[in-house]
Image 1: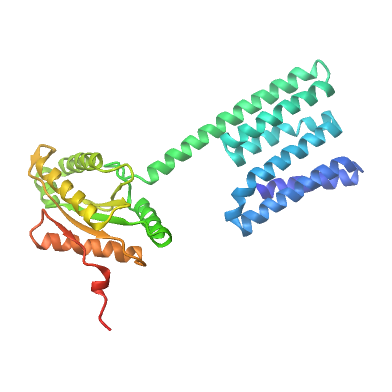
Image 2: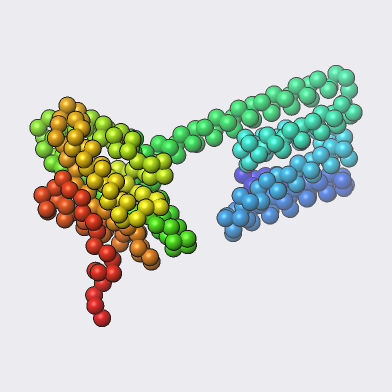
Length: 318
């Protein structure tokens, strides 16, 4: 969009220079420079582009207002595309703040430099453009948020999915490295889940998973995250939790599942592995230690919780 706008502004600048419209050429030329700067940021330093979007859009706003007061009615009509572009670039929140300043000034200018017949048309079309731009921007943001939510959720159980888990696990590793914030994970899966699907059917198996996730989620803190990583495999990420605290919660979850009845099937059990993130430990190693603990829980007869072996204890001596 920046490239297309830049191409258009360059064309207008060239026309103004050829026709000796020096004032307009200064306006469109300055706008071209701003767009070129934005395009450079997007191409070369995308992490900085968002920080300058509001500043550049505000500069464009000021530029158009100066042009309106200098060239009168000839530049009032630039307010319409600029209003739409502002909502497209900034979103409904920041664009509305900017437009609450921009549009009244445009109205003030139009009052002085339009006829009595033209003024209602200019203002009416400006207000309608503002309303439609706001509606479009708000709906787009709502749809985008819903798409992000769906992309991060398991469609069956509503738990977060593996893609979301990888992001959150990496975030926990970064917090541990920067601020020494403790974190632990609980890996668990439902014992003999394949037998449930084979004997009772996949619909019953799905109901078991849905009801179990609802019960587990009700036992977690707001800061804890539950992820479904496979058929009956789940991960709980516990921020600000040591191994001992994670073990207590894991046992609580194990007892809760065993005492509940899911899909009219009593006596279901889960096996769990617990691991605390250690200093300097990569995310894959952390999850592997928890997975090894889960595997040992199954080897020991299932329906139990096993703490992971400390990472240092796994390192070869010497």
